[in-house]
Structure formats: C-alpha cells, structure tokens
Image: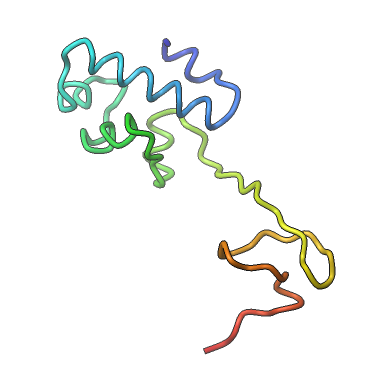
Amino acid sequence: MSRSELRHAQSPQAALRAAQELLLKLRSDGLTWRQIAARPEYAGVTAGMLCDLSHGIEPKSDETRRRLKLSTTIVMTEQRVCARCSRLFIPNVPWRKLCPICSPPEKR
C-alpha cells in the first residue's frame, strides 16, 4: 500500500492496519528497523516505535501520530447505559456500571 493510499484510509483503524502492512512489507524486503527509521518518510520516529507499530501497538504521542500520518484524535466509542437512571455515559474504568451523576467518584 502506498503512502497516498495510507493518507486516504477510511478510519483510524484502517490507517493503522495500512501502516502496519507497509512496515511489514518493508521488513520482509530485508530492511532492518533502523534502516526503515532512517528513510525520509519516517523522520523523527524511532526504530522501536516502528517495530511496535508493526505488532499493532498504537503510538499515543500526537507528534508521532502526525509524523506517521495517523489520525491524532482518538475516538471513544464505548458508551454504557446507567443501571440506575438509564442515562448514556462513557465509563472512566471498565467496571463502572453507574453514571457519574448517580455514583460520583470518591474524593480522597
């Protein structure tokens, strides 16, 4: 997949998969991670980050995401319905069943 196709990918997950496939193709051509990181299109991205990206680990830094032409906005899609009041809310921890209005976080 070319760099232009990577830029026009449909979703953040598709862009990540496209970048992963491109890195794995370069790696299968016999290049080391350091040689890939030395290429101009990966300027400023470490060899370790490229290796992590090839294994499906997303970069969290906005600067790294910009350099790799990935989306810099992370979309949270998991919404739940509060068990007490039936409001929609986005949980801050996986085990939260009640919205923050019905069960506010404890102050320490």
